[in-house]
Image (cartoon, rainbow, N blue to C red; front, top):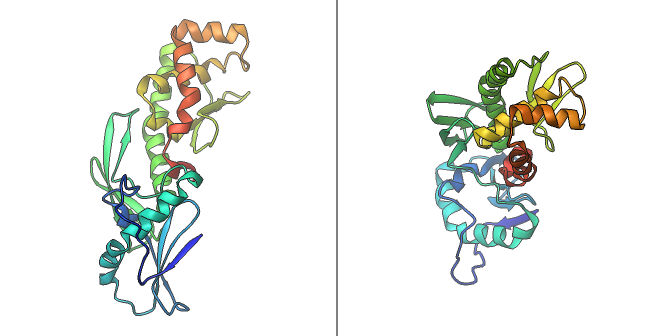
Length: 248
């Protein structure tokens, strides 16, 4: 954890390749502490930024304070670079390749935690610094809205029925199939190209017939997806390129 008591900040020359995007302030967690005597800025080991304020502090000053201390934040995140996959600053937009959709993300520091979709393609988050949790809840809903009916459609096309389906946030698997024919899907599939998502569906649906990776299983997969080897290789490496906030 890196703490910084606001005051004069270190600045060793010009900054290049900023780790912050234009919306970085919206991800800063604002916390009022009855024990705080001063305003304090801190960055944890994952790159999350928090501004702690004493009671009665004029929050209208927050934006100007953060901008004036941006050089310190940039310098600190850059120094922490090897320790974090990517700074956990907010995405100004989210692209769901599987659906071909783009979402503009707005962050609000007031109100109860949650999200809403005021218009198509616009996502509004209300959070107290735990915005990755809220984003994952929204992503799980998108998975239920889109991945589940998509899986059912592919199931009907292939003539491979399944029992039940659930959408979760697995850390190491894109999907799984149980001996009872229940399929689990990772909502992170929404970040993949449609052809890779469909291959994953084919793969799991074939497990309803062969609950293994035997030659018979792969023959069944090949009959429904002749270029399965290409998609299987792509899936194996895709997990490393997902946004850091998915598994924070």
